[in-house]
Each structure stands twice: as C-alpha cells, then as structure tokens.
Image (cartoon, rainbow, N blue to C red):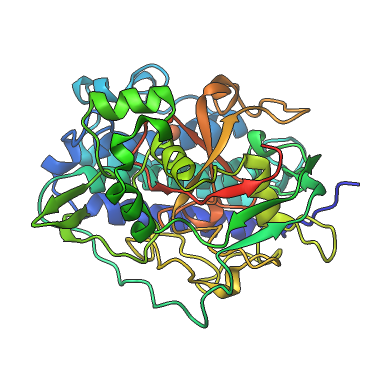
Length: 438
Ligand SMILES: [Fe+2]
C-alpha cells in the first residue's frame, strides 16, 4: 500500500536544469579573480577552480563515456578530479587546470552533452530512463554550486555576491509553535521520482508513533536564550563527543558569530551584521542542535518523523513530493536556489506549509535529524557504490529539507543529505520534536 505520485520528465527538463546549473556555476566563479579561484580559502574546502573542472569531469564521465561510450577526452586529468583519490586539503597542490582551461574544458563537455541529449533515447537502460543520468549530473553540478557558496562564505575579504533579502512573511504567523503528527504507517522514500538518487529508494512503509514537531525552524532568538542560559558551559546538555569538541575548540556560539559590545554579530558573505532574532539559526553542528534540544526539554526529530511531517497527507493517506503537494517548488513555496543569501524569517512561506501546518520544511536551512545515515530496506547502489553506500554508518547524521543554497532540482521531500556531526560551515539549522517513541 505504498502510494505516491510522480512528475513528468521531458528532455526539456534535462536541458533546462543543465543550463540553470551552468548559469549558477558561472555566477559563482566569475564573481572572483583568477587568483581567488585558485586559492584555498579553508582547508575544509577545495579551491573553486577544482570544483569547476570536477563538474565538467563528472559530466564527461557519466554522460559522454558511460552513456555514449566515448573515450576520455583528457585521461591525464581524470585522477586529479576524482574526489576519492584526493582529499580536499590536498587539492591545491595538484597540477590542476587553470581558470581559463577549466572553463574551456567544462564548456566543451557541455557542448557535446547537448548534442547527445538531442539524439539519445531517454529509455532502455537505468541510466537513460527518464533522462536519469542527465538529471543526476544537473543535481551534481548544483550540489557543487552549494559547496562553492560555502567556500564563498568562508572566504575573507569584501563581499562579491549580492541578492535581495527575502520578503517579510506573507500572512499571519503559524497559529501554534508545534503540531501533533498522528501515529501510524506512511510511505517513506520513493520508487517513482525519476531523478531520485539511490539512497532515497525504494518507497517503503514506516510506522511512526504520534509526535509533536516545531512548526518552524529554531530561531536565532531561541538559540540566544540557550546561550544566555549558559548552554555552552553546561555538560548536562551535550553528547560526550560534542562536549569534548566545544571545549577543544573553545566554541561558544554558532560559526561566523562574534560578540562586540554585548551584541552578537555574524559574518555573512563578507558582510558583518547583527544576528537577526527572527531568522532560523544557521551554522550549528549536530552536537549544538542536539544540546539545544535537550536544554529545551525536547529532542531532534528522527529522519522518519521529519519525512512524515513533510510528506504525509492525513486527508488522503498519500505521501506527496513536497509538503504542499506534488507541484514543483515556486518562490511562494520555499526559499531555494540562492535567490537570497540568507534564510527567510521563521514562519515564512505559508503557501509551502504541510497539511498539518508545518512550515519551511523545504528550503531556508538544512535540518539536522537525530538519525544516522543508513540504507532503506531494499537499497541497491546506483549508479556506483561511492554515491551513497560508502557513507552509510553511524559516523554521518542525516540532514533534510535543503537550504536557501539548494536548487529545486536537488531538493525533494525524499532528498537525503548527510554529514559529520561536527560540521558547522554547511547551511544547517534544525527544528525540535517531542513525544513519540524515539
Ligand atoms: Fe562531486
């Protein structure tokens, strides 16, 4: 009794998504000098010029070589752009393509890919069905664009990116701070979404006990109350590894925050500004999210709870693609796609609310969940083990919902992201839950 719906997946969708991804890549890499492109702004990140050529190299690998059966265009560079051969900290020392060469290479690959997209049938193999490999590559490029935006956030110096602020919330705030999600089975994961990735598959039934979940992500104001109450100085709230981490690194606030004259300020893409009270908190580790939740007498939702809150429609019993239904996201539904360089105030986007009234599940901030990154029952690695399988295990925590930096093509109610619980530079916040059997 797994029921879900699916979108259309025309050739035009693949062309449009590849084009949108490349426009964003260009904007992120054209915004800085060549010197900046080749510099390493943080040992956590690659130089931007690595991402640029890696985007082209993965596109060549999957579409021109695997789908179309061609030989490698530049065999000598392939190992340089294999993420598994070189950790990020080592990449600046590699003989990487320079900015001009990297741009030219990525453009040449793209030209050949568009020829292929015009003539290849989008059926007949798992890579081709519904244009999956093209969709996978568009998502891959957008995910690297998000990574490059993180590099921009870590970069020191004058601002080079601009975007309008989100509008103030439309309509009244949510009527309550939390909602009750009824217990019982629901369909988790997907077998129908054509561009879903292996770790989102297959659809399966999960039983979840009734639980309460926040109608909006935890705000800076709420998080400041935790800080003011000595949250960072009280071991009671912290997982032992989290306590060790904040003490070892003298952490006392979210990343990019500092205090001046009794006011908390943050650095955001080169701008220093007071921390806004009403925005979802950003740049906290899983440990910080977990400690806040315990201090508040609550807990992080499990991944299954998060997905039930986001997809289960109690009126129909179906799981929808998004909290608001099956239609693709629009700017009225969610803060996605780097239209803004910050989350929108908590309580925004009533049009994007779930049937139970939970808001901002999609967009704004990635949301840490309580869950380890594990395969669903019936998981099969596709198209390669390194996509997801090698990351399964207790060392990675699942994040859900996407952030303002995530493109719609790489964001769904089923989309799963994962990271180490110490990570803070990612665009992550959280919401809390209580009750249930977690
Ligand atoms: Fe990659």
